Image (cartoon, rainbow, N blue to C red):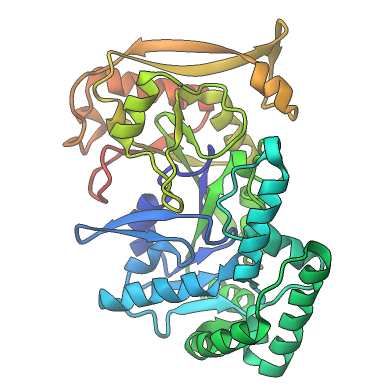
Amino acid sequence: MVDLVIGTQWGDEGKGKLIDLLAGNYDIIARANGGANAGHSVKFKDKSFAFHLIPSGVFSEKAQVVIGHGTVLHLETLEQELNDLEKEGISVTGRLFISDRAHITTDLHKEIDGAQEELKAGQKVGTTKRGIGPTYADKMNRIGLRMYDLLEPELFEEKLRLLFNWHKKTLNIELNADEYLAKYQKLAEKLKPFIADTAYFLNKSLKEGKTVLVEGAHGVMLDIDHGTYPFVTSSNVISANMATGLGLPPQAIKDAFGIVKAYTTRVGSGPFPTELTDALGDQIREAGGEYGTTTGRPRRCGWFDAMVVKYAVMLCGLTAINLTKLDVLDKLETVKFAVGYSHNGKKLDCIPASLKVLEEVEVEYLEMPGWQQSTAACRKFADLPQAAQDYVKKLEELVECPIRWIGVGPKREETVVR
């Protein structure tokens, strides 16, 4: 049995909290896509932790954790996360498995990322400049470095020099290969015990009856194919790719849980039909602490968009939703959400491929009374103010997927379970 946790908007929906909440029910927690541009925030023992590569389910000490080959790994970030866990007395020895086929992000990739973003001038994507896109590009160009290469020093040196020479010729970017070799020799010694054939490990574990929770990165609207291209990430985000990024058969997937923020945010450039650019948007940002986990950038905030979430439900086959940050709306007199788009007088059925159209859509809103009281202490659906219950039920109706969990605060226990 394999279950998935998937972001349904533009990322930052709060996936880490649900993963942390559910992790104790699974034998294995796995990561299938993205790189250090993703950031999952988790509260553990009154401390906040930000993970970029290690699955946030690592706090379930009985669980094994897997980083699949669909991810790309900045080894220095990975080492830092391991060190942070060690400082908290959390051991991953014998329970962390990193795919030998996962590709490596170097600082060269980060430099390329920044340089390419500058070349785009007025069409900047808003990348985190963590080198993710260039790493995936090298993977497709078949010149990339893989984790397995760390196990064969001579092969690694040969491939590293080839990679650096390639980019020196094509982009006139150069780093000291000898300096990198010395650094990676040290990193290889630390990471060797964790490198494994994770596809084999996962499939063998399923045959043994073990359960897997897959931790998605980013959100559906950032999917390289289905998102607001080119203002997207460099990997596929939807549920089908979770199987691809881990080497699992699609039929192994049982449930797909969508993480949905009670409003909408996005970081970086690109169309955002329900964006609030006024004081109310600022109020929601401050109440929700809407600043990027990876970059610290302020997130753009707007009303809930049922068109976006319904699109994610369709693409991912979602079976249940975790609505997060309902408490951020506690003080509002009224709450609004988008229920439809039209363009040039024509009603749209779905999210258009054309960014020009998406930027020009007329948004149809529904407005409901706010509840204007704290939901932080609520643990049962009946505990929520009636107006908050009505809001949740209406969202559920619009996106055509049951809402099973409702977040009313950042801590694990601050969750309403229906």
